[in-house]
Length: 84
Image (cartoon, rainbow, N blue to C red; front, side):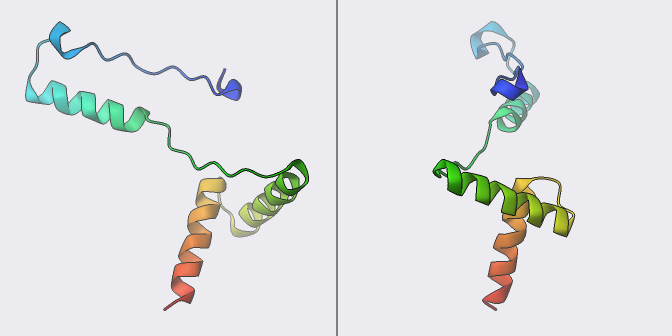
């Protein structure tokens, strides 16, 4: 199901259905913060998309990075450091 973008998330009962104390609220916030999907969407036509994905893969492999998030952060940091 993950291939389809469907993931299971832990159900957090509404506040009025459970005893509230500070630790419950902190735990609920931690679950909520970690459950959010964070993404950046970039739109390309098919030909450009294929070229970009190949370049991302090449860069990731060349620099020993695990995913495109690391590629993006690596490129941002290189750009930031080049401005110093």
